[in-house]
Amino acid sequence: MNEIKNTCIFCFRSNNEIDFSKEHIIPKSIGGTLILDGYVCVECNSTLGAKVDHQILKLPEIITAFEKLKIEHNKDQIINKNYDITGKIDDNIQLRGGKVKAGKIRFPTQNLNDGSIIAPDNEIYNVLNKIIMRDKQLKNVGLSDNFIKMKLAEFLLKYNSSNKGEYTSCPELGVALLKRDDKSPNTTFEPKGNFNLLPLIAKIAYEFIFLIGGSQFFSNENQELVDQLIQSINTGKVAGGLYYSREKSNFDDYENLHFIFLEFYPHFTIVRVILFGYIQYMITGAKLSSDYIKNLEEKLNIENIFSISYQQILDNPSQSFWVNTFDGETIRVTGNN
Image (cartoon, rainbow, N blue to C red; front, side, top):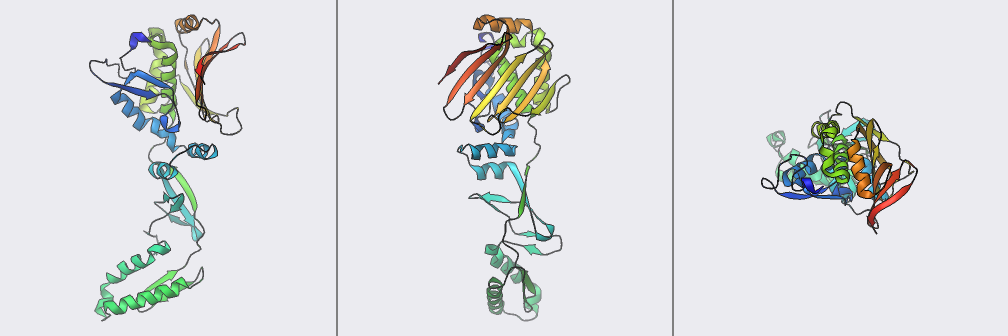
């Protein structure tokens, strides 16, 4: 790996042109601690963080994992920043622009398709007051501001004492209110903008293959796989010859574990990324060269390597690397507890 030290593995500029920063292979936002130090420039790191790593927070299962595993997180901020929230109430009325505050979803005052306005109870006075005080017709018929304010106060008292589903009207001001059921709307969360995890999974695969094999990854024999992964990262589209899919995990529920598996086959390479033990993706691409595998075997002094994997325990915390051989052996090669 030292042969390519201080050269960015994404833009391939050297340290006399750029500065470097620590790059989290698994995003830091979900507890990733596996780092490339001195191999990704500040500019590429920033771009990857904003456009690639950030996508993981648009996967609703991540919030579920945080909550089930009791991992500290700012749920309000994650949802408000990454999701558009809509809600449906009785009569299939669609609400837009929901925000989460103190764990509760709140919808702002908004105009409906029939020309009416829907508002939270605590905003009704301000909404009506603004509408009424701007109504020139009320002034034209000689109603004073004091009379309007008095009638508005009486109207709201009557509304507050009404039952759910009842209309309250004020003919003098030309307004009416329907008190709706205060049950929570049926909410839908949709990721903001384009949601695509392919670039992140491809990035994890690319960086992990480099972490394990060093500069050998960039040999001519491995150029096809390098190109497949870089193209998938940059375009967000599955490159030709690459296969990408969501897989069923061997775990039945979320666990405080992240895994990366790199598997060697005669005609292709597989990288599996498993987040929180349950969210599992697979990328299959061009084969890695025999020299890549041979160099790894020599470095580890292990023959017939079939796969090498990384395991992170989030609540410990610990990291470890494991090798599986074609002979069926499982060997821990490095780690910390």
